[in-house]
Each structure stands twice: as C-alpha cells, then as structure tokens.
Amino acid sequence: MKVAAVDIGSNAIRLFIAQVHEDENQILLEKVLHTRVPIRLGEDVFTFGKVSDQKMEQLALALKGFDYIIQSLNVDHSRICATSAIRSAFNREEVIKFIVKKAKCKIEILSGAEEAAMIFKNFEFYDLPKEHNYLFIDVGGGSTELTLIEKGKKKASQSFEIGTVRMLLNDQTHLPKAIFDWLGTELNARMKYEAIATGGNINSAIKILEKKQKEILKVSELQLLLKSLSKLDKNQRMKKYKLREDRADVIVPALSIYTEIAVASKIQSVIVPKFGLADGIVLNTLTSLGFGKVKFISA
Image (tube, rainbow, N blue to C red; front, side):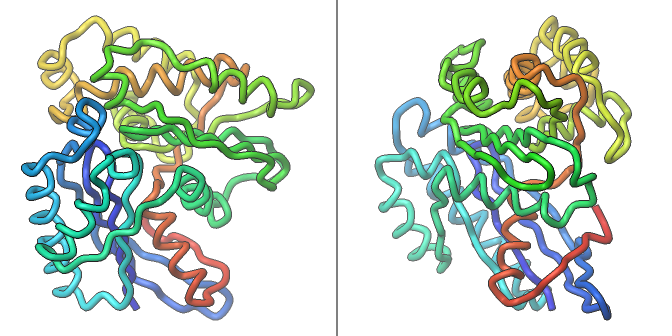
C-alpha cells in the first residue's frame, strides 16, 4: 500500500509518498518520493492578506502535477493539507473552490493546533530516548509550532504566527513576546531540555555543517553559522553554501528563531531528525486506517 501527503506551506508545496510494508510486529514505512515546488504563497498573504490570482493558478498547476504523479504510482490513500499562508488568507474559501475546479483536488486547512499535533505525531514513531525532556521546534514560512515533551508525554503545545517568510517580508529581526511568555510559563526550571528541530531550513543548516541525521548539534554551532550567513547577501549565500534561491533568503530568519528559542529555554543541544509535516500527515493517515506501530526504514 502507498500513502501520499501534500503539504501546502508558506514557502513551498511538498509531496511525500511512502510505501507501507507489513511486518510481523510492526509497519515499516519506506520513502518512495519526496519533492517540492517553490511557490511562495506567503509572499502574497503576509503582504496583502490574500492569495493572488497568479499564485492560485500556480498552486492549481502544481497540485494537478502532483495528482498525476500520485496516480502514476498507484497510491492508495492521499491527503492534501494547507497551513499558515492559506489559513491566514481572507480569500481562503475562494482558493479552495478554485483548486477544486481547476485541479479536482480537495484541500484541508489545518489550524495551528492541528498542524502542531500532526508534526508531533512523528515523535511517537521516532526512536528517541523517552526518558529525556524535549522542546519540539518546527519553523515554517508562516508559523512556528512549539511542543513540550516531558518523559515521553506531551505537556503543552502552541502555534505562533511567526515564520521565516513573515519575518523576511516585515523586516523583522526578533521574536514576539508571546513566545517567551509561553516558554516562561510552560518550561520547568528544574528540568533540562533538549531541542528537536524540524523544517527545511534546519535541514539545510545541518547539511552545511556536515552533520549526520540524529547527530547532536550544538546551539553554539548554529549561532556561528547564523553569524556567518548574516554577513552575506542572498546571492553570496547561494554561491558559498550551494543554497537554492528560495532557501538562501529565509535561512537567516529561520536560524534566528531556532537560536533565540533555544537560548531562552537554556537549551544547548539540538537534534535534527529530518521529518516534518508531510511525514506527520502520512502517519496520521495510517493511524486513521487502524495501523499501529510504524517505523521509518528510509529517511
């Protein structure tokens, strides 16, 4: 059986397809395909409050293309979820109707809480020491999701309307007070936390730093990388660090978000497992189908 997930984000549209293998004791999940189309919906929404006609057309074409791929691979179950950009757009209903008409696709708009829960779904299936305490940080183009995990159990979760594209368009350099107020309320001062960081930008950062998956990343290393990147303009970052254009501009605000939250939480180490919302959508779909324990066998 194959399962597909489409994540309509603020900076890009992603397609993830996984093959389900049924083992005696667990379900093995193998990545078949993972691709993205750099359509920056947040560029319109966070500036003008709506998705433009041009971006709607681009989105419809991308989803139609994804649908052809999904059909060609004989996918059994698929789900399309939209996050902060479409969630924030005042013409979101118009966007939904346009996509249904043009691409014959149904889009589900996730609330901030649903998005955070979907991303957290990965933690349940990821092999991390359950006796540790974690602050789960997912940074997207339009929102940042924080989830507090203590001894393997979710204690608190919150979505904040601050992301890389929003910061870039608003020329914003610091996080809103609401994030620090939430951390001050929810974090236990007597406990030590590690960060689990997800999102395309942190994946690019570990690639630049030549870190392996699950290798511990020091916050100080992120801070040094942020300092180096901040001294360069977008074109220089693209050339020096082999970054795509739509990554080279947002990576600086992204690393600012990760490091500010880590410092405020007195966190010194970060784990980057390289999963995200699309993985969570697939896992959520499998749970709804009645599948139990799932293990990823390819990253």
